[in-house]
Length: 253
Image (tube, rainbow, N blue to C red; front, side):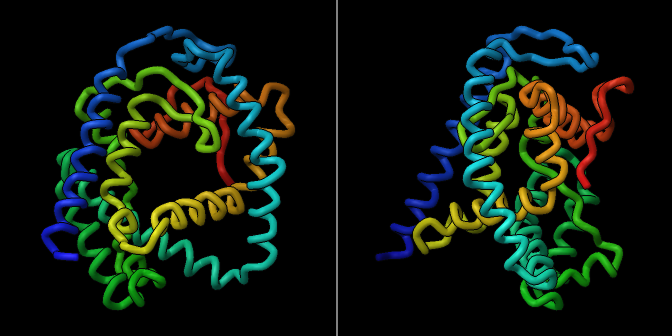
C-alpha cells in the first residue's frame, strides 16, 4: 500500500471527525431546558427520562462487567506495572494537551507540554517513566471540550451515552476531536485505539473505585448524584473552580 494512499485515508478520517464535531457544536444551543437541581447546581437536562433509562443500563454494565473487571485488574496487576501503565496513558495524551493549550492561547503551557513530551520520551523510556515531573514539568491537562468553552460555545444539554456515561453536547464534540488527536488512532494494528481506551476505562474505574461505588450503589438517587458529580468535575476542569460554592463536594480519592 502506498504512503500517499495511507495519508489520504488518514486525512479522510480526520475530515470526517472534524465535520461530525462541528455539527455537534452547532447543535449545542438546541434543546435548552436550563434549571437548578435540589443542591443549587445549574443543569440542562431536557431528556431526563431517557437519560435515567440509559443510566440504568450503564449501571448494570458497571455492576456485572466493568466493576468485576476492574477489581480483577487491581488484584492481578502489581503496583509498579500499574504506575508504568498510567504513565504511558498520560504520555499518549500529550499531543491532545499541546494542541488544546495552543488553540486556547495558552502558549506557555503548550511549550511546557512539548518539553515534557521530549523529556519523558527520551529519558523516560518512551513515557513509561515520568522524570519530567521531577524537572518541574508536570502534566497540564487540557482537551478540545475546554477549547470550545474558551471559544464561547455553550455546554449544550446533558445526556448519558450507553457504556460511555455522562457528557454534554460540547464535551462530546471535544471528545471527537480528541480521538483525532490521539496517536493510537493512526496505528495500523486493528482496534489499537479501542484497546487503549478500554485500558483507560478499566484503570480509571479501578483507581476511583470507592467514589464510583459510593455514587452508584450507596446514594439515594445514583442518577442525580452522577449528574451532579459530572457537572462539578467538568466545570472545575474548564473554569478552574466548582460551579457553585454550595454545591455538594464530591472528590475522587
